[in-house]
Length: 331
Length: 251
Ligand SMILES: Nc1ncnc2c1ncn2[C@@H]1O[C@H](COP(=O)(O)OP(=O)(O)OP(=O)(O)O)[C@@H](O)[C@H]1O
Ligand SMILES: [Mg+2]
Image (cartoon, rainbow over all chains, first blue to last red; front, side, top):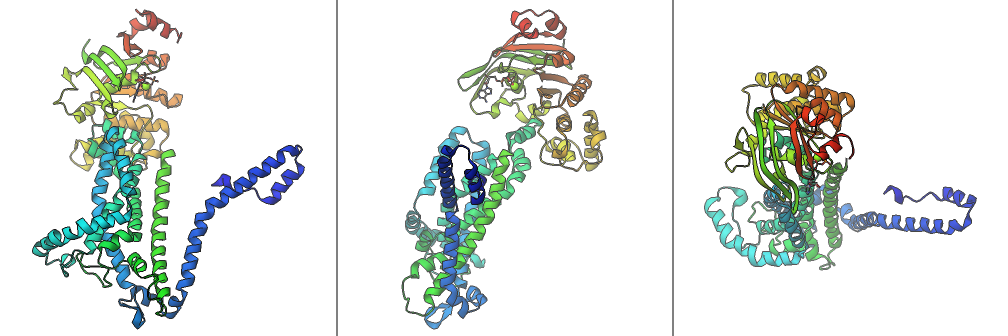
């Protein structure tokens, strides 16, 4: 970043004004201009995020003025025609689906990345990387359709009956509705979708631990697992947490794949077999319809703002931690 | 001469490239054996073959035998962690584990559950820090991170950590090359002290260090052992032309 800072114009003028060899000046000026253009281009994303946030804020302003923030965030009823705009069911729906997705995804992802980083042959690694990239490149709508055709029936015909039979007394596993369109279906689809991201980030984190440390532990006769548990894992724990948060923020914003399998019922869920209605689905399903209802448009954009703020916080935190960890490699 | 390690027809390949060719050597018990030779001749490779560190690199192939007290350490039934407990390694760059000074020394003992209670661990940590000549300097800061030590102190800490699991053999791959002259002398003095109790195999690039330490010398060139014998003989009267040239600094 540092070298893209343009020289302040006043200094620049002095340099050029005094230049003993004017033939260089046009080239220097060109260089300056190029630098400035690149600098602005690098800043563009920042401006975009700011612009989107401000635009959302402006458009959501009417609803924010009409109701106290607490009523919006924690309100439990969404009935725009009766002027009830509670985001509660949607925020909770998002949280449930995300938490289920992350919980399902993290354990196998951790094991996979430990295997890849610590045990696998380099041949296995070089084969796995492109496969993971491929998985990450599959469009969400394809995951959604896969969820609809495979996961929803699986939940309905296998998991729900199983839970009914064996886990009926535990309320988060109770089966309150007959379909497979549920938080669990959404969670399973999300778990698969965020897996490549989590695996590759955690793998990178493991790679930052210098081999000298592993060798020092192996040299006194520790097994490979003892070395991983005692030496490597303590070094990478913050990075693993950051990777999980990054995966969660991806899961938070995932719209189409979840929308297809989660049922979209605006209720407060109490079980993973309940349907839910996450924030992104709310916005995608409704924006553009029924805009004649007063404040409806503003409420949807308020929901978008909530989503954006949560994702930004998650992303910024995890990116900061990950950057620090990955830089350590060069220290 | 009592042989502690015997290497028989050892060949090592990194992928297609052969790094050691038909190596046959004997390492005498409770003496210092020094491996010398020009850069890239396979000294590190030979050393790593003695504690089975070669297999940590993908694509290495090893044929032949390495017998420690008559037991082939590459035998299927042999537990590699047992081998590494008996054959300790002092690395080229000191690699303190990211924990306290105390925990560094106790690490291997905990791994092998070698003591019964905290008191015994404490006493053992002190004992090995004393042997490594570090106790005086660190006794007041045992729970500081090991990385707060100077490089020379770190290397002595690594020595203490290695000795704490009670090995019979100490390997050192240019263990003083990252150190200042005083620290190097310190490590050399430790190694000379320790040779009463341990079989020591050291790789070094400096002829003078070799002359100070060696009881037995192995001279390598291009993956082959050219000459091996008692230090006095090799230094004063080398049998091979290449060894003579190397000793005279013609390389
Ligand atoms: N991991 C590896 N993969 C491929 N080739 C290797 C590897 N390690 C060493 N070699 C090769 O094997 C040969 C012997 O290497 P080795 O490190 O044993 O030499 P050395 O005598 O220790 O050299 P130096 O004095 O420079 O440390 C060299 O030609 C080297 O390039
Ligand atoms: Mg070497």
